[in-house]
Image (cartoon, rainbow, N blue to C red; front, top):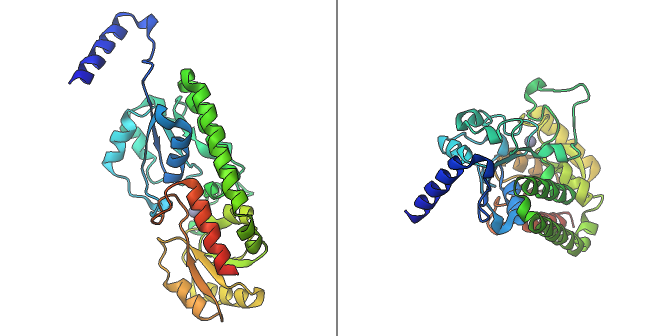
Length: 307
Ligand SMILES: [Zn+2]
């Protein structure tokens, strides 16, 4: 009640003197992100100066998150809406209309399409390509699995938070530097595992692992999906089995939310092969609670599998 009275008093003061409006010094930016990875990086940069929530969970397929009415409520009073972009969230972008919050609509000060800060892979040479059900029509949206991109995301958040809340700019800058240092320390500590992965042939279910192998040095010789989002046909599976035998690939990497029956089938038909289920997001499995933990987990498990 006290808080509400205070807000009412501030509101009255604001209405009385619109020209002299100054945000409260202790007002926290309200940040809503689509994914847990963006959420974790936003929290690292914003610290105690922001409140953050995310819409999808790390164990869900980010392409197919169900749009819930409760999301609209979260977006209604958000200062920042940060999303992966490249149509990853196309299924729920309509929620923005329902939120009726001009700050986070396209062109608003809090509308943050994170892909704009990223060198995107797999951009179709002829422009948008949705042919045959490709779910990456604007390019590959799974860029957070590359630590260099995680640092780019942190810098983007630092700039955005500082723009909206200049009084805490030095805090955001220090936090972004600390996040980058933690990411660098994580990858440095993984040097022995990365050396084991470098050049090793693997198969991936989805092209989500493209950025991860750019960083880790593995060589993806085939994808289980003939196109992103398109399940494998029997003839495609036969081709994957042949490719694995020819290249010596022994590991099929996939996220926990795919049905592994077909991956198991392929693994059974390649001597010594195995299916490796890895989370592609923070919160994807128990214990992967922040971004450095995600990278540590995936690199360590992949190194053990390809050894
Ligand atoms: Zn995808």
